[in-house]
Image 1 (tube, helix red, strand yellow):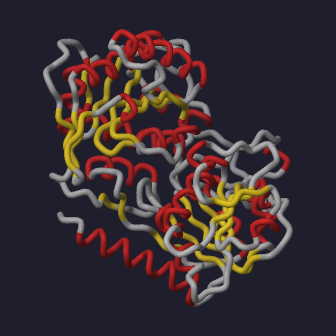
Image 2: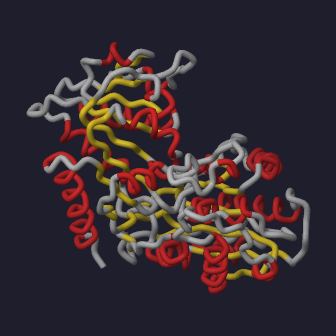
Length: 442
């Protein structure tokens, strides 16, 4: 497979979005995107075309975090750099611009009136809620991370909305008592995407391919976590993880498997272990150290380069696990003469939206006696398994399938509440069945 067909498919989807939102003036246009499908580039392209010299519109862009707003503002400033169009960064009074934003031609203010001369204004939803004014065009980035109640104060500020997001990612988080609102026809626990579809029914545009995931990755991720299928845009021979001399330890077979197939599944002996399982922590350390000592290189369409610690991420689900793994891996980095903290080690929530060459994942259900709703959430596992461009290694205690079968889904059914398209219990079993082909003995 070449990239010609995926490019045509992607271009056709983008052209449909532009035509419906900018040319035909539809009230709401939604775009569902798999991991690494170029949804940020889509947002930038629509903002670029919607603020062309022939248009008098200013586009408001709604993000979910300051980090997302900063990234979009910088990338828009690059796109607008040749024709005097300005980008505004609307922010709170406590916001401190990071270095990569402070030094660029981006106008910043706490007050939206100060940015009236800007063609695109970027801010998190929490800030837009306090902005006074009305704009014809608005774009919601990561709409599946946005709760319905966050949409309420900003929806009427925009004449038309483009909503872009990944339905396979983590659901938006709330600290309130959800029992008070579950089942309501306009529940604040719904995602903004669900609320827009409920109140303004419309056809959803699907981005059809992932430019991040290889075919091996897409074949596991797509059927497990997505109701609408997608394919990889990466040609079979386009990427390779090239390994140097073996390290001479248990990580060798793991990385040999991951390099040849894109996946490796490492199973430690079954057991119900405390959350900061020291054997799992040690295995994660061995795997990361083994890759760094082998002088691995990543080959893709841009060439071949040696992988560094910044190309590696370790994903997990709890902060105490993160602390234990950071201590373990930072000690190993120090022994190798590498600065501690060079390898990204974080929870699924904080890895969402990021991309790495290789990832090492501590399975959410490893060593657990039960399968709670938190650990079964499909989006959590999907995020962990979809951050990589070349290979992913999954580490777990054996026995997850037995745990799942011992704890079938038992959440109460709430009248009028939409049933999730992807069930976390089924998604976890699907992933286990597919990972079995890449199992490596610990």
